[in-house]
Length: 304
Image (cartoon, rainbow, N blue to C red; front, side, top):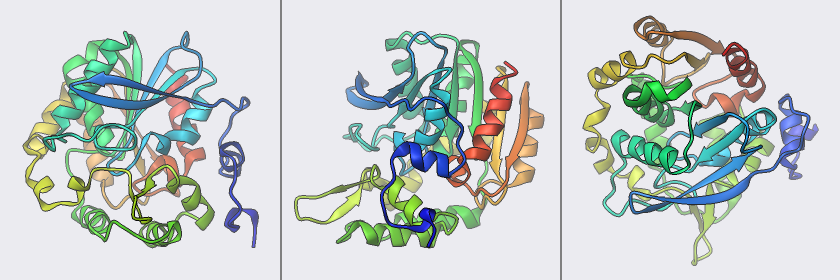
């Protein structure tokens, strides 16, 4: 058994090196909170506050730690803010189950205003990508650049059904290993050690001793499907076309959620966008192939 498949826990830095992520400083983040829209939103802040800012927005059922490998590398040149969206991680749950793109986008807007961030870059994955271009469609003049990661106005049904099936499974399990088994079945690209390293920030132990996900159980309910009128394809295409800042569209080569022809269409319909495909990655590009994702975004960022 090689080091990557062993059960021994690794530090963030060793795990990142094993995945081919490039960095020279072993930076670590600071946990911070900010109050917006009557919610306490948690985020991780990496790097020097004097550097240009990059905001990272995760996907559904993830947390700010989904970006740890990427933030580690970016934090050498940038101030990096990785958010826990409302209803996720260590941020508050919404009392009225308001998890629309408009709500996420408004949270993002108020966070940016309260922290007085200007001339910044946003990188968003999946629902975080949709949140990012929803925000950018209204505030494109404030953004230096936008990176949309495996997010599109239209999803492939096979991938959507696969993700929904995964999320609707029993959500209280007896051990961490049961969650790891579930992750590996859903995403066989990960090794057991990789799954263990990522899941520690995505689950919590309940008073009854069982473990559960660190996101609102509302996301696993049928009501969520009918809650998002702002996610219609027509609305999202219109928002994309209103984004005028430089943009990079990133797709995982093996993504089962976002089709290649849709990302090509996105690049054509946006005013200033380029498209890149990251090999050896599915929908969760930064986690599946962080080294390839790092190369793709650095090539774009270095041209700004």
